[in-house]
Image (cartoon, rainbow, N blue to C red; front, side, top):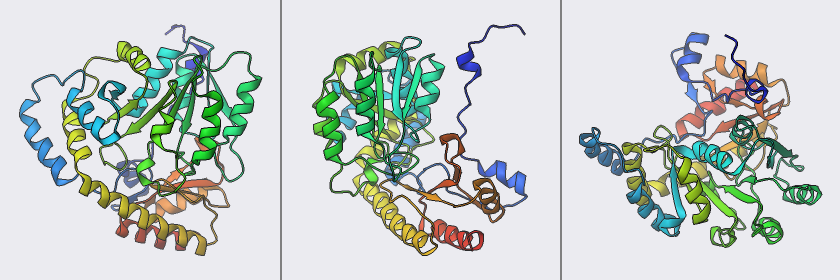
Length: 367
């Protein structure tokens, strides 16, 4: 075919998700694998969620609520944000894509950090906009001071700045004093939108993590949330944008009708109201995270102290060989070559049994 395709599209490298168990079972001729590659919850949906989904099946012949009214009402209570300042999307990936499509003309700019969630870059290039990636500072933390310096040099500000906090895949976080210093300078700027992606904030236990109320006091700041991690609804795809009604109304204009399916809406409401299940997941993940980081220290493997449900560590050798060795032992974790990391990998924190298995595999591979 002689279709004329944009070079921006041809140069894109497709997003590569964590390997599925089915793929590696076939490749390595093994019946059993533990998958800790995609930052999913190790627990099944709660009883409350399952019961709500079971009841909702009888309504699947009907279209879902296009405005997600019930979801926004429940999310309003959970996040303590007015309903009109909440937009629901088919996962946070869709929301990233919609924001860039709304805000960016071809060749306009989007800024984020090196080593940040790769969807920002993919969606930017797919929209024919330009991506600016500011290097991480020592310790793999996002460098807001360097971002600010870069913004000062620019004759035309980027349309959007994406700031993931905590960051995926490094697990580092930006403390409140650094975030507020950045926002005191750039928050309220009418020429630029600042999107703070808090996909992992429920796993944070740092005392100096930024207060969402302070962040949202700036009209040009949006918060992005997901139900794929701590709420265990990755298979249903649901996320939130919180902030300016003006910006949300623009995003609302271009989103597909019925973009959030009926079962996702039902499950989201139940999960947001199930505090007991939420506490169970966060407690378990934090405990297992501490335990595994102690283990990495004992193994003399450098890692970034994590505020998320995963740990970023340095294999200190060719990650491809390490990855193959781990797979041969039945463990699937995430290599990070697409992010530019040559020896580092990321492991999702799983259940006690899964992490025990991971430790035994690490002892064999990293001996």
